[in-house]
Amino acid sequence: PTDAIDARMEPSKSLREAVAAMAGPGAELRYEEAPRQAMQRPMPKDCWAVNACARPAGHWGDSEWYDLQLERRLPLVGPMLNEVVCALPPLGNGRVCDVGCGTGRCAVEIRKAYLRCTLCLLDADKDRVETAKNRVAEPVEVIVEPFVVGAPSLPGAPYDCVTLVLALRHSTRPAPHYAERLGLPLHTGTVEESYRAALTTIFCSLRPGGTLLIGDQVAAGHPSVYNQCKLLEDCGFEHVDIAWRDRDFFVIGAAAPA
Image (cartoon, rainbow, N blue to C red):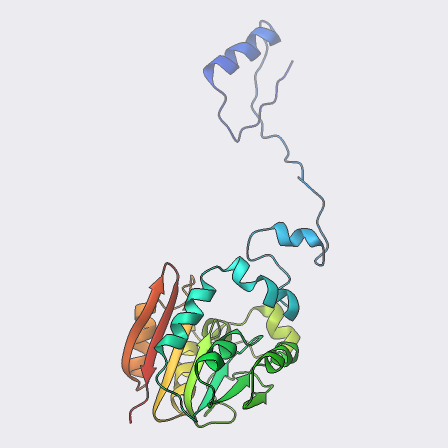
């Protein structure tokens, strides 16, 4: 007789002795890896149970689901937004471009603090921009275009301030499914080259003395917070510093030369 034991866990001495006793004299004991059975059938992509799975699973392409779930899935987004707004200089009647505005979470918080500035909502996702427009008080400009990394400047430039909240990382390396749905270009060079090109585009989009605020999450394969600060300086920004950090979330501030 032959007994098969799952080789993923080495059988203990007592287990081997018990199996040998049951098998009888002269039995050959062979340990083989048992086939793993699927715990459950594959779920459809629109199934509710996706909500019970850990990130990155989720209906991230749906603007209403995204808006509902963002801070639930990423609890530090709320504090990060607050720190972005608190790091801004007085905006007065200036023009602020919220790059990759999504559903308008950052723009809404800026509007609460600064009532007179013009908020320019820039995003390639028409549904998310529409949601943002409906929740942000005037004056507002809407630009349904992608942030083209390496372009001479942002659409609608120049600006007094540019914010990128959870946008720079996704702009330099958009997820393939997102890029396909919105017709975004997939960048070919290194990640550092893409960051440098993106930051140069923003630098050329600011008026003299203009402000850049980046709120994002550290991710594998992307520049560290320190290296992002160095890239900003390499691109010509001044007064580069980390305004806030909590675990893998951070806010960086920088200014164009006056």
